[in-house]
Amino acid sequence: MDIELIEKSEKVQEDIKKQPVKILSHDETLDLLINSTKSIARFGDGELKIINGRRVGFQEENSELGKRLEEVLCSKQDFCLIGILDELNGYENHKEDATEYWIKYLYDYRDVWLKYVDVNREYCSANITRPYMAYLDNSGCGEYFEKMKKLWDNKDLVICEGKFTRLGIGNDLLDNCKSIKRVLCPATNAFNKYDEIINTVRKYSKDSLILLALGPTATVLAYDLAKEGYQALDVGHVDIEYEWFLKKATNKEKVENKYVNEVADGKNPGEIKDEKYESQIEAIIE
Image (tube, rainbow, N blue to C red):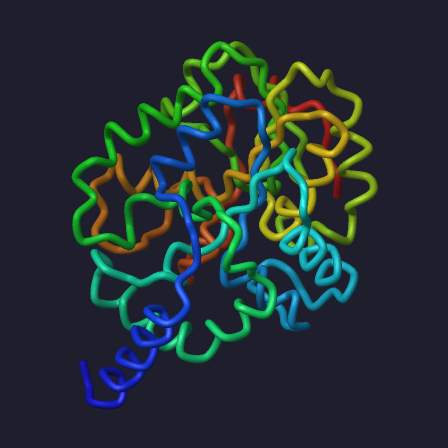
């Protein structure tokens, strides 16, 4: 680590010590969801960029989305848990590349987060769906994923996902659920179709568990559906993390037939022929 990075790290650690944020661990957040019917909306670095008028890889600048994300992040309610970055309190147990990323990020943006985050409030972990790749010690991941599967055990699922996300296809992540219905949405700029997406999901029973894998749009969608009495879980990245875990991957890599935004050659997964998957598709929103 070079001198500049060390100095930035020292400044970040000083800021964290001075103003920590109350954030539950991955396991504590998961326990809360398993033992309740609450929803969760997750905020990562991308959501904050959009709030501040910037774009991310699969969502262009959108002032309306930025306003909605800010509304959800600052909301005072109890029907939808708010997950934020664990790294706001540090990056221990992170691999070298992840550590360097978070030092630079927090040096620039931790103060920005504190404009929106209430330090007297208890938040959940946004990283519940990302327990594997970033960490030096991920030896408990197998047990963690098994625990996560309790969220949808014997439940009817409605999966609202990007066109090429294909959540649970080709692995056993969702094998213990009762049934799956899928709503496929645009792989990029999904918020442009927000009204059509939420109106489509509203057609399903509130007894269903709604799984959302749709980038920043999922954050707002989880909140809005929760407000209407659904249990909606923003689970973006969980399937890719599970694939990497199964492969024992040590670096982010493309996953066959699935959209991987964080890998240069992972954004054109192509078509698949899978009768079970195709039978689950009930709506396609272009």
